Image 1 (spheres, rainbow, N blue to C red):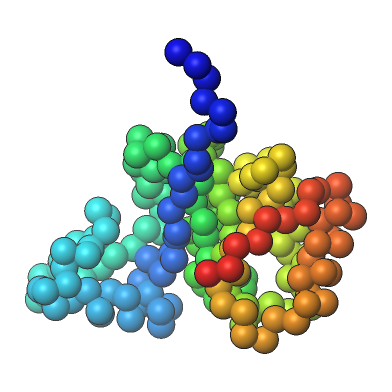
Image 2: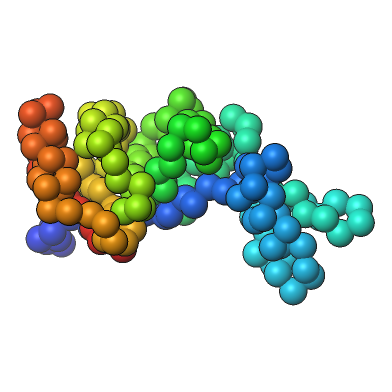
Length: 178
């Protein structure tokens, strides 16, 4: 049988990662939105309905993250695409748990940046992630980078990111607009 001419496509899954619960307002809102019985089918595998009908959907432990990684690998995923949040937001926990997990071997990650969050530190912060040996690369080593929206982005910011990557010894990032 002849070998395929191209490598198989990579398959990833987006991680919105608001599974942090209260006291974070976004985590609390996610849980609240899943309380009506008509939406409980959307509960993740780690979610549960508590007495009184409130919902808890939190993946905030190493064990939970490691199981998510195992499920992803079993499903044939190549990478997770994490929405990047500022450190102070409290929504970085999923990415932190993933990056520090010994179970992540063989499963890469990429980042999604909301255009409205682009600031003077973005190029430096993204490049530091792109240098991670477990960061997803495509097309000859280009860091895979997703941008959610373009409102407020100026061409000089994208050029700055590309320059930062090249200065760090990385390939030109492959930017996907969402």
